[in-house]
View 1 (cartoon, helix red, strand yellow):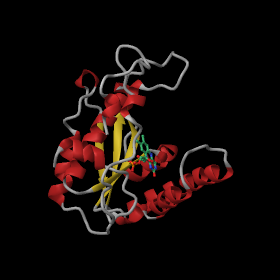
View 2: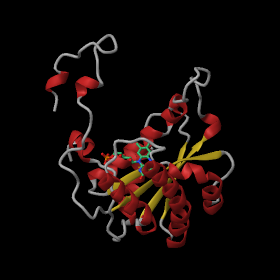
View 3: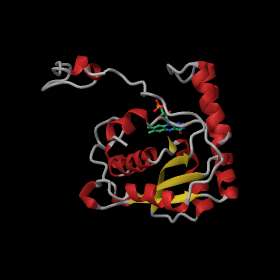
View 4: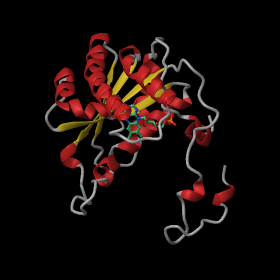
Length: 217
Ligand SMILES: Cc1cc2nc3c(=O)[nH]c(=O)nc-3n(C[C@H](O)[C@H](O)[C@H](O)COP(=O)(O)O)c2cc1C
């Protein structure tokens, strides 16, 4: 499919069919991750496609209490968000059904190979993830191209030791994300909801208008 179409319609899939993802498709999608750029071409990313039902159930059982506590914080107002109640319902349904998603792709990273260039700037560190998430995006776009749905999740970082034990992940690897992968039970959106370009892209200085950005749909 057209690349921009794929980008504009690749939503976080919240409803999956139970149908399996064939071996050749799984390989094709995971293979796309390999071509992503990484700092100094160190290629620190590895992927575990979890299909085993007991392991998917175990990952769900680790995920659910984390999500429940997040949901509780939204409900109490401790976490602020613009999420509507119906959006949260979809995400809640997703959390409850993670074990039924046919493939959970656990994204691992050789954490010693990741450079935190911005570690001393007194803010959230950003740069280490830059050698990981391009591969994740490649995987997800390749899935979209095949008509497969994906959801990028990071909440299981809060259970990294348990995830590592479950999947025999060695000490030198960290878990960076779990990407849910399967056939979507609902149609892809016609176009994702995102901020207008002229509110987030500028020319030469921050805040200076980029010609044509306002007309960009
Ligand atoms: C870095 C990152 C982490 C995310 N972590 C989670 C997660 O742990 N659980 C979850 O349900 N969704 C997670 N999401 C999905 C986002 O909620 C979703 O991408 C966002 O709401 C936009 O949805 P849309 O692309 O369908 O518009 C994550 C997305 C990103 C990019």
